[in-house]
Amino acid sequence: QVQLVESGGGLVQAGGSLRLSCAASGRTYAMGWFRQVPGKERSVVAAISWTGGSTYCADSVKGRFTISRDNAKNTVYLQMNNLKPEDTAAYYCAASKYYSITYYKSDYIYWGQGTQVTVSS
Image (cartoon, rainbow, N blue to C red):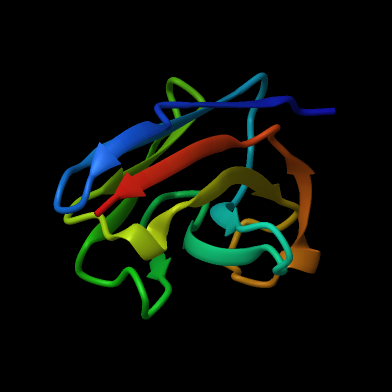
């Protein structure tokens, strides 16, 4: 069992930046960040392979968000720049059961509790 703890969320003005961190209690494989707003399904934002050599970003955040990881610290990051009000959501870190990058929610078996990001206009 791996526990994931997110941090770094908060309130920011449009155009601002935040960096989310996800600390894992043990070794993890491919990792992902998802987000969810009330009444909608949780959707993938970004994903990264076990080595960090492959990354994926959803079209809605491409060019603004960057996912990275430090396996020595069992930590994954999501750097979010040029934030927009539509980025407002609860952000969740998740650990996959595979080494390779994946953006399918069903491939993720461990989930954090989430951290809220609110972007004001």
